[in-house]
Length: 191
Image 1: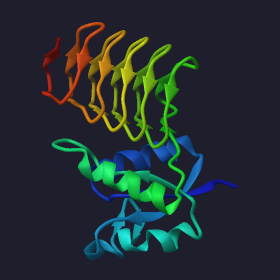
Image 2: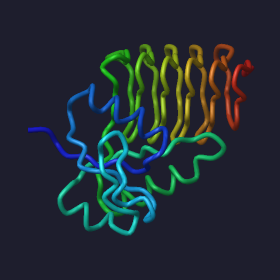
Image 3: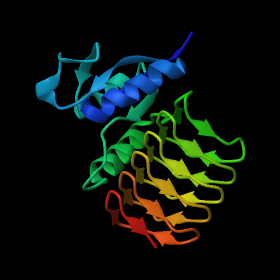
């Protein structure tokens, strides 16, 4: 019997996370939380069953949640949702695509989603509530702190520290053993 999980946010990022959850085959998606106006609509066949106001009620029958709101300009909504879910008592499991590679010597903290074909190598540490997006590479000994989005096909090289709340854009690359923070533009080199 699979554990139940609800998804928080019904936009584009939600589509990708649904795909990962279905492939991982560990959880049964019982519904999606979104804005009031969207209740009753469906996202890839899953119903939007409530809004933020319904979280305490939903918690009575479902203890797991994952944040499926994306992060580009700001992560403030993801941070706020994470804190709200923790206050209610939800468990935020790590969701890892079976198509990703996560070293047994790496650490991935709660609420983080690792998308298809992402690579997390030995001794890397990923914080809470991060998005490690499709084809992202986190090299050995790198640290990605809480609430970061490592975008599609980006490269975080060995020994790099990505500070909390950082957006690391698609196809961006870092030099080795540097500190990176803030908004890293797509295709750029972080030095």
